Length: 465
Ligand code: HEC
Image (tube, rainbow, N blue to C red; front, side):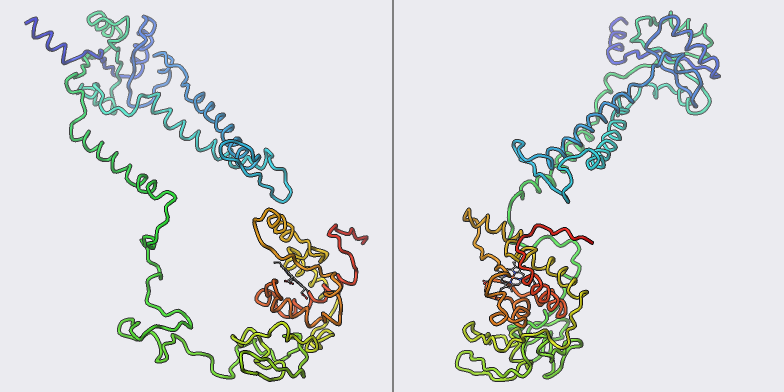
């Protein structure tokens, strides 16, 4: 008999006594009595919130707000610090930050860094609240011995319970029971915990371990590819139009077998598209005005030699358009200054407005290299020269537009400046794709005006207006 009871006490542990009450008033009364007679480890259960129950069982204010507050203050330091580290200095070890100058604003200032800090506060406070609540409530909890008491089921319905825990110093199996009776308990149950039944089922452990391993696979896959190059195309989950059968515009196929649903994808000459009909001109591309479009006198007769072939024609016909003749380029020594117009074309009207436009376009397209005053010292140029000095780059300086040869109307008539912008010259690239014809002439006008002033300093001149 004695053996059996010791066996039982090994498997079952008394958690406490659960007393049932019929109404909230008796429950609060019993709680007050229990607290006053010195019980500390107890808890009350009811189907709805009962006024006054917290002080009755001696529950103090939650420390959760303090936890959240301290995490949030930490987030302020983290958010500000991260930005200071990344953008506000450039000496930190081991990864130097990068001082990021935006429109001349201070490198670091509190107002500009509020949004990121605010977001980090919100995020970390939310996490602190959520997980703090779990930890304070000792969650997650997979089972609770109270659920073994069948009477307890009515706690979500119409009954009220008080649990005196056996861990309490005041607790005494028979003494506590009679006390509870005295406080108005309708019935009293022992709450026992099954000690043998305390382990997770084996299959759950296995599933848990397998799940954890599977979860590690994606990060492992990403990590293994870190900093790797790969010659295979990326995985196409959504193929979009990447894999459709198509012939690229104006490509020439190697053979006629490129088919889609049995339809051949190109013409008999292996091209995927037809060339423009000879003599056809796309809308808006009629550029027979040689002076306006090329800066070349319309009656200028020329000869271009390329290889053994000589091409003769009149300016304005296809021959003069370097970009369209493909193989034929004009050798530098053959350049004939005579062909360029020396005055602005008839169809270009020079007004103050146009000149202002020229200045604006110049400052967008040219100043980066040539400088605002055209002295050849733009920011790009300065940077490239600095790099070149350390051997980090090779660079030809943008020419000063105040250079005697560039200024000289005889050596560099307006038509030639226009041509420089249109087709580029030597190391300077062409701008015909970016700048429309009229803007190019406006820039030429502004360049002439710049040269006229002779001012070569980029320091802005304050205007009296
Ligand atoms: C990317 C830098 C860069 C930009 C932008 C640039 N240039 Fe130039 N430019 C140069 C360089 C470099 C040269 C000298 C080319 C050489 O002689 O090799 C040059 C030369 C010139 C010359 C003298 C050409 C000659 O030899 O007669 C003129 C005129 C000129 N640029 C005008 C302009 C104008 C107008 C613009 C704006 C539309 C412009 N450039 C934009 C780099 C630039």
